[in-house]
Image 1 (cartoon, rainbow, N blue to C red):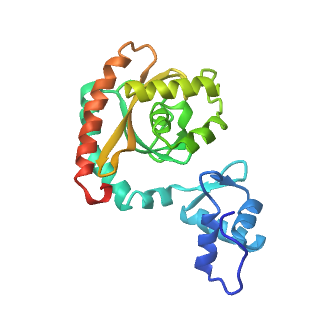
Image 2 (tube, one colour):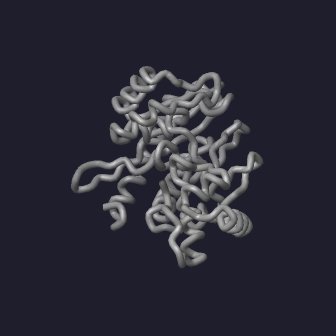
Length: 258
């Protein structure tokens, strides 16, 4: 449980931080009572703090009454050195891919069992792309997510296989099929999806790898989304791989990613 029992004399700031700390990867959306329980804060105090945090933009109240992290915290998070540096380093390479293909290009990192989209350039064709900067989408249903899952620790893969949600009628939710697919991703170095996250779209993604003293580490995934009628998906993989290698080399020269 995040937070803990409320302690006498807690400041308003510590209580507010406790409320925010109630949210995590496994609990991205919470009701008022769930926030109070997980943060160890009295219900009336929790209600007041939630109202203030929603007004400031740190939280958002959904139509179903549950709360989730708001855009304001995401915007602040982008100023963190690693995230900021990743976006700044990757930006020209994303632009190169977009210029060459005119398709939607995005960059994502793994956050628990979700692919967190940290950058995106929209394509020329109107396709129903659900990813936006700040989106957190299931690893098993997205191109970048499958790359990140294929490179994740075994315990993360095991957890993901137990939580396969059906996003569209084409989403692969058979653990054995996903396991085989992840093996293919590791073998060939890129992933492919067709209408698994949103109808009418297909995607290709590759890992962004940084060479460290202990060995190569996958720090992000670079992907491209196109309409399903396109027949050149496999041609896009080498384009992405060239850009991903450039991002990886640039990151390797920075202190934060050593």
